[in-house]
Amino acid sequence: MRICVVYDCLFPHTVGGAQRWYRNLAERLAARGHEVTYLTLRQWPEGENAGVPGVDVRAVGPRMELYAEGRRRTLPPLVFGLGVLWHLLWRGGRYDVVHTGSMPYFSLLACAALRPVRRYRLFVDWIEVWTRPYWREYGGAVVGEIGWRIQRLGARTHHRAFAFARLHADRLKELGHSGEVTVLNGLYAGNGASGNAGVRSPVVVFAGRHIPEKDVPSLVPAVALARERIPELRAEIYGDGPDHDEVVALLAQHGLDGAATAPGFVASETVQEAIGRAMCFVLPSRREGYGLVVVEAAAAGTPTVVVAHPDNAAVELVDDGENGIVVGSPDPEDLAAAIVRVHEEGDALRQSTRDWYARNAGRLAIETSVERVAAAYEE
Image (cartoon, rainbow, N blue to C red; front, side):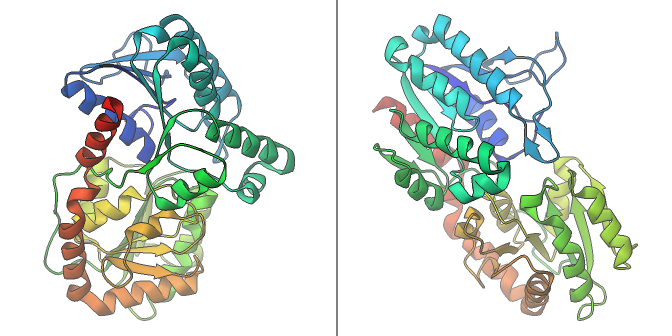
């Protein structure tokens, strides 16, 4: 089967859960014997290979800065959408399947516009579906309203839809999508349980972009409060972004020099090693499309603290008191109480986290999702 995967980013040149999914999907489809083309914006030096074995990676737009102050810029999605439109106009007839992310929406609209002409089957991943109020918060009254309307237009195009959380599958139907929505639970590409099964270090870990939605600064005063009950507690806060300077300033303000570090982006192996020896992973985010790090932590026997926010799909991956703690808000007091609770439950919570992962490993594995996607292509 000839398959075209469409996404404006490519792992590891840009890092994120969606980037990992499309890289893994393309590689695994190619390994199954399919002919796979990957359309993206250029993120690697001119003249070098993109480095995806067995996949024909094609840049349909130049290297561009995708973010400004933690927000997606408007120009790159427009450029990418035009590049996808041009490519499918000339080569779309050779594909049996086009599989695209919903965001950025201009590429989805390009794929949908040419589907009746080029006669490929269209599959769309709705990793996130934003509410109208959130669009207005994110982009302002005018830009936010335009963004929400474009999202709704994309939802109503003719395609087979995938989502990675029930939250976003339900929102997609509310936007007017008339077709079937398949929820894919598996994005974890690891080899199964790992990490130290014994006593952990008294350290909490965070890893991710330091953007407003992640609410990373709230973790610093939370650690300071938790240290009143757990004096030996430390924190390792990985990642970078527009909130990083505030995080560093808060570490000094709360007297956490020597008890907490914020080294920026590091190798994924370093993050995995930190999660494997941590007491818990804390994810103060108010918005997540899936929450892959929750699964990665559970595979290492490390419980996760998550926030029960209406836009946070990661909550679907945590059973409170079993593989982590669900708190009502990212307020430092709530986060600190959850950290203390993890510490007090100790080995019992780590064992139940390992048990939770063992029961759910099959549905959470990326191979399970790839299998369901490949089966949908054949239908």
